[in-house]
Every structure is written in C-alpha cells, then in structure tokens.
Image (cartoon, helix red, strand yellow):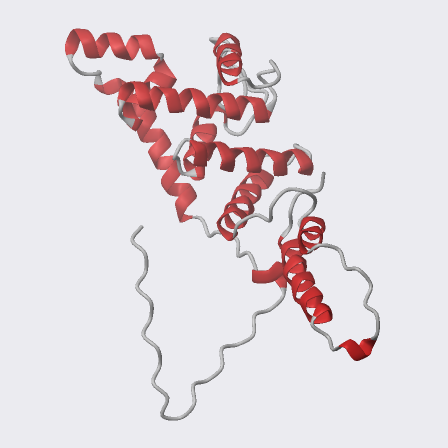
Length: 249
C-alpha cells in the first residue's frame, strides 16, 4: 500500500473542489454521469485507505528521514522511510520528543543497526536479546531479530516508556536503561540516591538531543510543493484584523 504524500493530499482537496463544481453545474450540461464518492477521491489521492498525514507528522518525518539518510546511508530508502515513521509513532505514543529517540540511538549505537556490545546488547537501541523478546511478547510485536531496526526501535521505546513509569523520572529511566533497572533500584533502596557516575549517560543523551535540536529542520512546502499565493495587501484605510492569540505550548 502506498504511503500518503503531501502532493497526494493536496490532490485530494483539489478533487473535492472539482467534484463539487461539477455537481453544482447547471442542468443545461445534460445528464451528468454518476460521480464517485468524495471519500474515493481522498482515499485514492492519499495512497489508499490511510488518512492523509497531518502537517506536524510531515514535518517530523522530513526531519527524521534527513538525519537517517545522513547517518544510515547504507539502509535502503524504503527502510529508512519506514524507520522514520516508526520513530515518530513510538515517540508520540510515549509522549517523547522524536529527537530524543534519535539521541538515544546516537549514544547507544551510533546509528549502527547491527551493532553489538561486549555484553551482548544489539541493534539501534542496544537491547539484549532476552529484553527484546520479553518486550516484543509483552507488546505483541512481530519478529525476534534484534538487528531489525523497526523491531528494535519499537521494543526499545516501549521498554524505556515502562522505565519512565516505574522510576517517575526521565534521568532515572535513562540510568536504568543503560545500567539495568535492578541495579539502579538497589542504589535507591539502600542509599537513597544513585552514584554520580551514572549521571554520565543521561548527560550524553541530553547533549546529543541539544545538538539535534540546533540543526536546521527541512522545510516542508505547503500543498505538496506548490507555492502559496502571496497575501493580498489590505485596502487603503482598512483596519488589519487582530492576530489570534497563540495557543500555549
């Protein structure tokens, strides 16, 4: 099934407008053929039964795909596109910044989807095979290959999300992700705090996240790359409307 595209979505809106114009034409045009439903125009233009992606999703996918193209040039384009989509989906489901997921990947594996540590952790998010299998079974994910980028990211983000819920802190969750939850929990129970040496990992992720945020994000043109019409100049003496207040972030 084709993935929705910006141009396809724009085509959907044009199809709606054209369909409405034809159906509203005067009867002198003669007997009109039966037109497909508007939903058919939209579904076809957007690539099938999937709804057109939101502007926010398009912007994020462009940013993620650009980074993955730079960092993982050996991965086929279709796989990079799929991986970007999964990073966005899993980050949003976990209430995480998608760039945060990229930062963890950068620190853990350097974007090497076949990386393996001395302790046997594997893949983009460096999961041990038993951790990946457990998380895959818990979340009903298909597959068992830790070198599969999509599976590794899905399992890794969901595992991290559970750690955040368990420890109530992103930094503590990162320490548990890196050093093991039982180890961090033991320090908290016995000493009431975690040794400073474990702070290095969250600091690395935070530093990488800031670097990613400073990078310019690619511009996604409105309506599939078609230029927007310049706003009309207000008539002489006209009062400009007040700007609508921005929603609080």
